[in-house]
Length: 257
Length: 257
DNA sequence: AATTTATTCGTACGGCGTACGAGTCGTATG
DNA sequence: CATACGACTCGTACGCCGTACGAATAAATT
Image: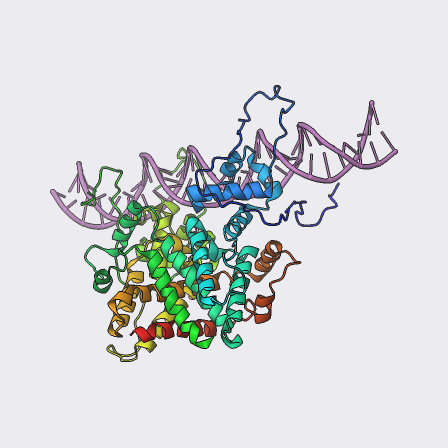
């Protein structure tokens, strides 16, 4: 007997601390901020009195470390044990703050998509420039963390993504896009950014593996003359192409505004 | 380098048979292999040979079964042992035909992206309709296999994807899009389709899990008024929105043709 | 008959996510 | 002061995964 009075399902009291907005500086550089990861095999008799209070774990620290790890090792390179190591903690300690690995992915993805807003003042009349800046920043954020593109299709929309959508929606609305066209316009732009990022991400992996795999699948005899002639896959001015295509799209949107 | 298929590295002779397109009825035979895990010392001088000649494995069968499995269980639900089971084979038998699991993903993804071509005759003057059909079919193919969206960002481009790009490139070229704008136009359309598919895929998962996750991340107090007012996330006429946005984009492309 | 080649598959290994419960520590309460 | 408790950490263990390795077998060739 001695049944626990807790719910039928495993219902652990998890923290899920909702901290406002962290992500102070976006750090992609070689940030090796791990304090000291004291190996656990050290004699436990010593140092029973910690000279400094250990910072302990927190959701924010976990997410930050996860992003760091994802940046350097990719989606498949994120392992719970390694993440814990980098934080100087035991693997299972993470699970007090986080429900499971999926939640780490969710939080890491959303944390990377925070938007600081346009540099100008609000109420700008230049809605086209505003949209441009917003979408370029969006793409830049995701390109800075290429794993975000491969995570996006499988994850729910977090608050930062929704905020971006909200902002985009606002701008277009202020620009006078008809209500009937608004949603389609938003999706067009959203789709364009996501697609551009995904495309780019699939070209950015290690060149060695990529060319080998491509050769195998492609077969050496076949060619794609039009593609080859236009250097579609070889031209690497991705930024320019992105801007140009966005121009096309906005041209299509503009007449209805 | 790498001129011959033989290399200094461990280089097993793998088949990699390239055959066109085949989708015979697949079967999930009641193969209840109950191999009593008896050590070799168990009296087994009796040669228990297979009563039937096995149809054996083939790359095509493996890929077809993988697609089936991906359709029903999703990306994380594809396991090598299960895939082999479904083919009535031992797990390790797969590895004669396939280098590793990644290759299964590559092949499954590309196999799903084959394009049958437009229904009309070639040389149509209606390039806009042609592009429309091509992109709608593209999207439909990926939506029929939602896992394709999440696989795309991490995989190389296979022959079927390249063929689609080639065809698109051709159509736009025939339509008179300036060479200087061609690549940007192609990427615009490609990005749009991919983005639309990814977006859709991220909304199509189990509603239960999705709403729960979204609630947790969103926080119940915050709202996104503009989004909410426009019913952006609630309106589920995805097909209509896709067409409308594509119209916008083509409007933007058209003046330059 | 002997050898080679093509193919299948049993076993085993290391690594993963994480369930479970014991351990630690600061504070609130008697 | 003793005790209890809640917040938090972590060692161990389990089941599952991809796949390295090499033995087994059938068909083709010599």
